[in-house]
Length: 165
Image 1 (cartoon, rainbow, N blue to C red):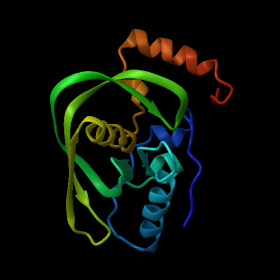
Image 2 (cartoon, rainbow, N blue to C red):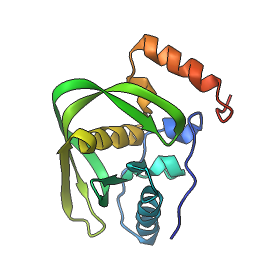
Image 3 (spheres, rainbow, N blue to C red):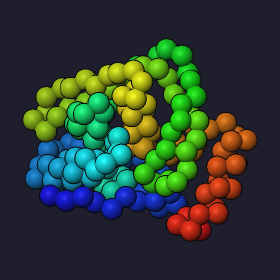
């Protein structure tokens, strides 16, 4: 399979909610492998399907030396304290913002065999699960920021040389 190019903020595919996978076929298998290959690169914690231009509800993750994926993830629980955590995004290069995230998150979905899987965690894993499911819902982390910080982040974004105007 292959490492896929990451779509950048401003690309309309990042604002669209993804579609649930109804049939696991060779196309979905190839998408999962591409997500895993793309996530496996140094410094990457996760990649959602729409970040590589696909409109299916799938993401891959990389945390504490483990790498995996989930199809049709649904957040079942976010709990603990809502904390400001330093966060970045491959679709928003060179911008790092303190983003409100819950301490714990649990996601339920399926694997390529159609078997139910549950992903859960605290710390980085909780952050990944929340960040990637947000992507699949058509939301980029900047939308989670308080309005004053979001305005500042958007100003910083407009000053980059990659931002789609």
